Length: 50
Image (tube, rainbow, N blue to C red; front, side, top):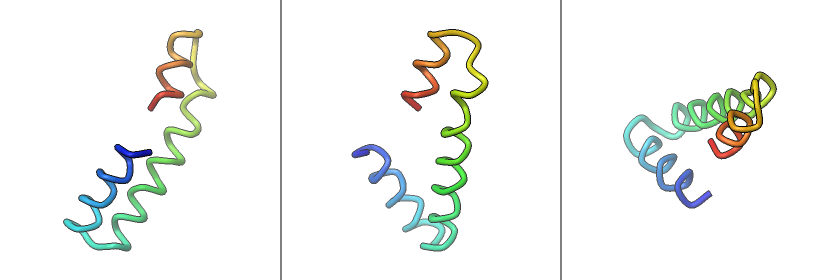
């Protein structure tokens, strides 16, 4: 969470609040669905970490 807040604040400062929010929302959606296609325990663990 600490890394995400630092990165999202940099994105928001660079591209604006609306674009930053859209970017973070799309990333959360993508990385939230990534464990569903994991082919093994290792890839599942990595996808949950991301």
